[in-house]
Structures are given as structure tokens and as C-alpha cells.
Image (tube, rainbow, N blue to C red):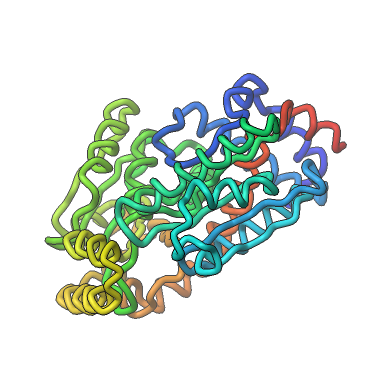
Length: 383
């Protein structure tokens, strides 16, 4: 827990100039923010966490509505959005995507305008179909911006990507914040294994591994990506990862096995995702509104997963990591007995909850830096 003095000190360290560049910004992809901008954002997230732990209320945006639109299932992200909005004094409203008029022909721009006319922030999860989720968010943002401009409304209504087909920014930023806490000497130079792992449940989106490899190499980390044949990621994202590593002094490489990824790693992040070719097939089936084909593709993905049941994070692989005790990370829920053994999970359970809770403060920070004219001054006025 933090004291009020410690919380105030964390606010005083914030750089007003760095935060000024974030005013009015939406978070659609972490790759669109500079490394300096991300550092400033995470400093704010840490300050907001310190304030929360010290019992200092932060009702910066009272009487406002923060919508979150979900086209896919969620537990942690819905909870984090609600917790973030409530801590900022706003009212969170969770909207089920199936309850919108999108399936009846309403465009993303129209959805954005209709929700945005009463909203002060909007989060969106749209992650299942390649080529659609991030594009939907951009169109929704255009709908909001066009409405505000046409009506002369000066409200700032940021869009927050709560997971799309390309990236999962609030998750990976929370992960980076957790890594900064775990390695106070700095994350640069640390080796991270981002590995595919077996799952019997469903063909999971590509966005978490893609988000991790896009973000972590930019901060000097050595990222190893491992997956079985056929589980490739979007080529453009692989290029983004390589560029980020070259600029920072970190590295990015694709290795052929989970064993190679884990050997000597400081951090391991074993996580399942769907076969790339079948994820592409799902695009066409969805466009044709062929529910039968969609179900068949899901079955094919799970059958293919079964060929790689040995891709599991277990005690023997963990023993090969740095000191035999690498930091185990996961976005949750993990398939216990498939992605990870019960023993590894049991040892990491509390830390995984702490990792997940970082998302609350990342979302708070994204909303606060976008909407507050002088955030540092407003936070200092709370004391």
C-alpha cells in the first residue's frame, strides 16, 4: 500500500510536457504512439495506482458516461473498464454488441455517432475477424468526430481499443507496467518468451501475441516468438516488431520450439491462438454470414490444435528459464492442463491477479490523459 506522501510524490514526478502531447488522443494501436508517449502514459498509470492505494479519490470527470461496446466475451476487461470509469467519477455503461443495430445494417460510423452523442469516452472490443475489428474502431471514431464537429460540441471523446484483430493495447500496456514493477532496474535487456500453447477450448484471436511483440521490443527487451507450423501472425505485425527492436537495441526473433523460447528466458508468456490460414477462412465465412462454415472452421482449428498438445508450460520447461524461476505471465483465463500445468499456475496465481489489475490503471490513464487539460495540476489539487 502507498501513503499519501508517496502518492503525491508519484504525481509530482509526472512530466506536464509529456502529458500535453497525449491530450485528445485515442488508443487504437500501441505502434501509433511513440515510446516516449507510452512511458508518459505508464507513469500516469502508476501515479493513479498510488493514489488509489493511498485512498485518495480521483473524481476528475463527474456526471459523465463512458461506454464500452463488446462484440466478444470478456470478464477482466469489462471489470477494468467499469473500475476505471468509476474511479474517475464517471458512470460506466457496458453495451453488448449483439444488442446494437450493426447486424441490421447500421455502419460503424453510425454506431459511433449514436453512442458518441451522449458519451464522454468509448471502449470497443471487436477481435474475432481479421481485417474488421480495428477498422470498425476507426470508423466509429470518425462517426463520433464528425458528429462533434457538425454540432460544434467541444467534448473530447477518446476511443480505447479493448481488443481488436491486430492488438490488445490495454492488456499489453498493463503487461508492460507489470514488468516495470517486477524489474525496477529496467526492462531493457530482459528476455521474454512469447509462445503459442495448446488450447482445447476455442480458436483464440491473434491480438495478444501480436500486441506483445509489437510493444516489448521497443523498450529494449529481447523477444522470442515461438509457434508450431501454420500458426503464423500477421506479416505487417512481424515487421513492426523487427523495426521496434532495431530502434531500441532490443531484439526480436522467431524460434522453432517452446523449448528454444524458454531457454534462459526471464519472462514467459505462453498463450494459444488460432491457425492463421483458418483465421483468414473465417473472414470469408463471416462475410457470407455462413454460420455453418464458421462452426466448421472452429472445429478444424481445434483439431489442428490437438496435434500440438505437447506445447504446454510445465515445470520442466520452467526449470530451463533464467535461474529456473522466470516470471510467468498470461492475459487470463488460461487453459489449465493445456496451456499451463496446475502446478505452474498455482505458484503464479496471485501475481497473475496483480498483473490483471494493472489494466484498471492503464484505462484510467488513457482516459485521464486524453480528457484532462492539465492532468498533473488536477491530481495535485486532490491533496
